[in-house]
Length: 409
Image 1 (cartoon, rainbow, N blue to C red):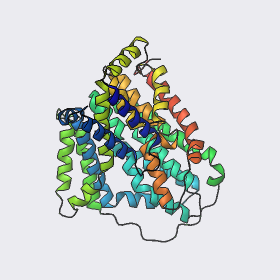
Image 2: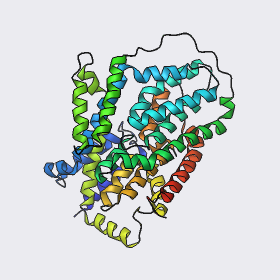
Image 3: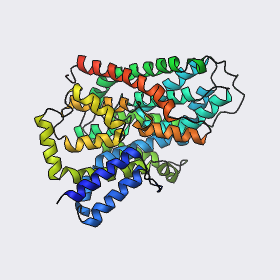
Image 4: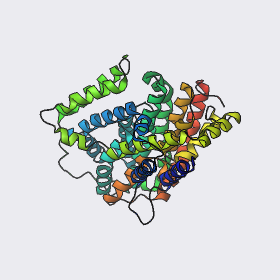
């Protein structure tokens, strides 16, 4: 019987929706690990089957990108950029524009979660020292990080997964998503200027004279070089995960940066979450229920191959269980997606992550890191800005995908 597998699957994704278990200090990764343990102990999944369920190329590519990002973090590039933005001269609206451009640009070529993790405390503290409310700037940081990451196949975890599973071409994806991603950055800025106009009309205090965080220019240049080589790898016949791992290996062979430090900056929790969800969704995909479910969806035309199905699905799924688990679940039962539909899934699920605080891991990272820095960003604060900016950005994305012929209604 598949009953046990189905129950574990449902409980796992219920845990993804709530993010924790009352009375226990379990987060999403811990819940996913316990689900895999239950499947192994019950004998419903063997160790061999578990290994075959995990998409190793996706994990290798994600790991390699995290090493490249660690190169910039240890070089002090994130800290220096965030400090320069927070201490720049001009009006609050100009500061907000700088935050959005910096976060959006970095997230297009580096994982948005890492960008948010590194920049949040510096932006929060720097803006507060200027006598300004940090909330619109933090919302600009995460809104831009999500929107900017939608532009490329390496901007966020769900795009990496979709690109690997679908074998999508890096440059074709960029051609499809760069315009709506750039337009979304403008929408994020305009939305925040409208909703937080009182806070953004305040007069900032002059930036206090202080030493900027150290920047190792040579190591930062090495990181830029690694990104340039990575772009070439995506045009070569070499598997992208192999090329990315080769680049990561070269960065680890440094005389000044400890490999222990670089590997320590890898988001192992996210990698573990990916691996465990691969196992859980793989086990569910092998059940009779999943097969019947897939047949029923196909008969009713409810696979997300059209914008009419994709948009509400992306919006609902991303803001209930999170956009990464949502994409993994969709791909587990959707066996024949075409490149246009996969491109739409990546773009729309990423933009949908701006709707509510629980929509993406980047949102949660910013809220938690800001709270630790003394700046509270509530669920209501996020929804107040996130809902209108998401509806506007998704509208632009839908029109672009339809006009460009990537997806039909």
